[in-house]
Image 1 (cartoon, one colour):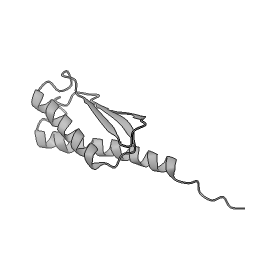
Image 2 (image 1 turned 90 degrees about the vertical axis):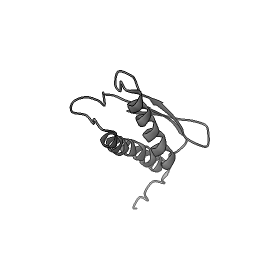
Image 3 (image 1 turned 90 degrees about the horizontal axis):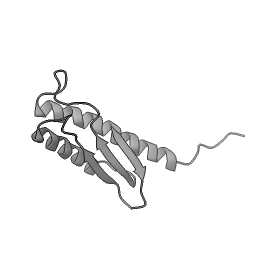
Image 4 (image 1 turned 120 degrees about the horizontal axis):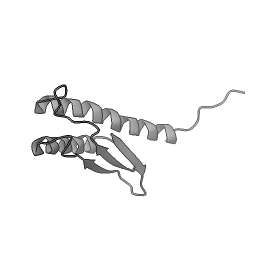
Length: 101
């Protein structure tokens, strides 16, 4: 999940919350944080505060078990969430379309 709020700074900020109950292994929690920070740095986000939080366990039987698969799924989901924020900012900044007489 991605929570956002506009800030008064010229840049975006990131917080990552990875609960132990959703990712019991420290290596998994660190991987999630590392991927989130990497994608955050490469995204051209507006000046917002972002908090990334897991909403379900990542080491379940139907979830990713390997680091490569976990990273791939995280990249897809986080890229989608960050892109949605960039698109929302673009919609709010774009001038309205011209009206016809």
